[in-house]
Image (cartoon, rainbow over all chains, first blue to last red; front, top):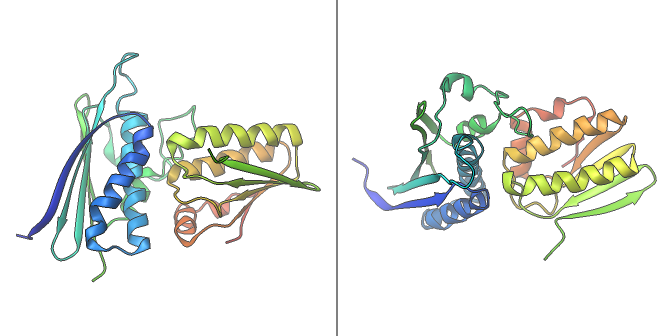
Length: 147
Length: 106
């Protein structure tokens, strides 16, 4: 078992201003590992993608005036590893394999380019996506920082 | 509050210097501001200057691709400048340099 250095849990309403909030919190949380600018940029970008997916897709069917929540759970492990799990109780994804395919998007009206999962996957060491239609989605990302 | 897009014009070139983080929350306003000038000024080249951008996720890629489409309608090309290593990595990852009316200068 890897020793946990620190852990945190955060619940945020799924509104777009919280994209920047989630990035700022994760930056502060991982500062203890003294990441490089590139490593910090990678995690910030991956977290932003996951949180944006919750805001744009997960709760799109909620009635006017209702707000869903985004749950962020992060851990730092020895010697220099970070894991971040981002989940929601939203609509879920019917076909995760299809959703992970580059350039796939269900957003035909906006300017989403369907690259979110590709970015999460490329900027971390591992990405696991679990989703149940009607129940929600969870993405778990892990990254080992350079020694 | 600092202006999030600064425009400048020289001959047929319209330059838009973006000076904020680009995510899903901010991209809509940036997009609307650029499109307004693009449509009213109809330049032959639209320069998107990223030297003032401190963060960008795939919302920025959507912003770039959307402007390429708009520019193409009026026969204009799009040039990206001022991309940091981090931003270039994102642009390169998604292969958007291959868009026909787009060129990238770091």
